[in-house]
Each structure stands twice: as C-alpha cells, then as structure tokens.
Amino acid sequence: MFYAICKSTGEKVNSITIEQDPKYQFINDEEFYADPDEIEDCPDNLDIKKIKVVFRKGKNIINWLGTEYYISPCFFIPNKSKLGINTIPESPEHKMAKNFIYDRIKKKNLEISYSKITKPEKYTLDENIFNLPIDYDKIGIEITTSRIGGLSSRRADVIMPFIVKHPILGNGVIIEIQFSKQYKRTKVSRELDWAIRGFSVAWIYRKDFEKINDIMIKLNSDKINVDSYANLIKENNKSHIRDLKFTTQSCVRQLEAEKQKLSEEVKKWTQEIVLEIVNDSGIMQKIQNGNNISQPVCGKCGALMTLKNGRNGKFWACPNFPRCKCTSVYIE
Image (cartoon, rainbow, N blue to C red):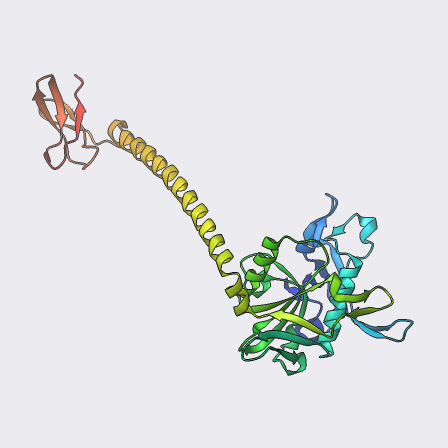
C-alpha cells in the first residue's frame, strides 16, 4: 500500500514522500490506518476505517546477478491473511514492474520518446527524464485522479508531475502498466481522463519487457513512448465528442424526467395548501357580518369574499373580479 491515514492528523499520507514531510519527523511514533480505498473486503467485526498498518522504509536489494534495485517505501497490514483482510489484488509481475519504473525515475535513468515528426523528414523527439522539470517530491505510485483534482477515482500506476508546465508534455507524465486485456474504449477513456487535466500518458505492456521475474527485469528498449496530452485529445476528439453528446443526452433526459416529477409534486402540494387555507378554520379568517354570516377569505388573493346571487343560487365571489375570478360554494 502506498497510502494510509495518519491517526493523529487525519491526513491521507503517501509512503513515497512522507519521509520528506516535516510534519512526520518521527514516523515510528505515529499510528496509521489503512486507506479504505485499498481494501477490497474485510470481516464484519472489523472497522474498515480503523485497520492498522505499519510503515516500511524503502531499500536497495541486490539479486544473485549483482543487479541492484530500489524497492519503494510502503505501508503494510501485519497478519493480513490471519485477519481475513483482502486488499485490491495485484499480480507480482505488475508490482515488480511498477517498482522497476519507479526506480528508474528516481535514479533519473529513463528515456522517453514523445513526438514523431514526418515532415520534412522522419524523426522523433527523445529526452532523458534528467532534463525534464520533474517534481521529485510528488512522484507517486498508485495515485488516483481525486488526489490531483480529478472528477473520478481513476488510478495511475506511476505519475511524474512537473514543477512547471512542459510545452509538449503538459503537467506531467502518467505511466500505465497494463498486463491484462483491456478494451479500446476503456483505454481511450483513461487517456482522456488524464489528458483533459494536462497529463501525457505512456503505456507499457507485457510485450515491452524482455524479462520480468524475481531474478531480472529488463525492457526491450531503453525508451518508452509517451503520447502528449494535446495529441491524445486530438486523436480521440471524435470519440470524446460522441461520449460528451451521449452523456449530455442522458443528463438532459434525466433532468426532464426530474423536472416533470417535481412539477407534479409542486402542483399537488400547492393544491393541498390552497384547500387547507380555504377549509381549515384555524387558518381561514372568519368575520361575522351584520347578517351573522361567516365570510371566507379568497383562496387566491386573500381578499374577504362577498355573497352573490346567481342563476343557480347564492355563491361566494372575490371582490377583485375580474382580476381574480375565484369563487366558492355557499352552504346555508
């Protein structure tokens, strides 16, 4: 787990950056709870908001080939299996790949290819991340859009935010590691979700790794391809517009249905109020005139009604006729 809730501050903290945060100089003295977003399920007798976790520092490890890797700091749940707690599942390969990419970023040892030029001749723009304005204090693993001002709870495997906006790459680079099958529509949706926030996206698939196991992790190429946020919006413009139209249509239809429902409720409520005003002796004003007849109040304008003679006998009429045409039955 890369996020946890600090008991004393109530803040959601990142294991990647907590050691650099001056508010947490004595991490071992703090108590942390698991981020509920990371818990898939737990026994009913446990409060999902109060599952204790422990901070584990990052460390360098060396495999039997002598290759050194950095394992990022994280939070973990002691005795998770015995307690019957299941976190959101992740394959070992996927986890190794994330740590591998994070390690390359931290060591500033990663090249990206982010733009293809076809005229007047073909070439690509390549860059070592060492030359990019990366905000290394905010590099994260398994971060969600809600933590970057997003609208949905979309996860990113690795994020490289920039200190200042890059003219082509925007606010930073999102690296998505995808080992399982994914529908094209889902991929487009995830790309646009980041692109509209100014983030460029890089996809790394299983086929991009030459080897990935406990012994060795190696990419086929030292460069990863990044699609700029502007290019993603341009390429997926038609799909994006279609989705917006569909969403707008659904919202408008829903609003119309709610409008009709609300209109009927208001109409019914208004009728009930008018009847209450006209018929409830506790609300209606009754004034005894010289003939000892109770005069009701007009249900529309509030004027004291007058007794009239019509073709069918006596009835109450509003004195403000013809501006107000309210009438009421006269009962002797």
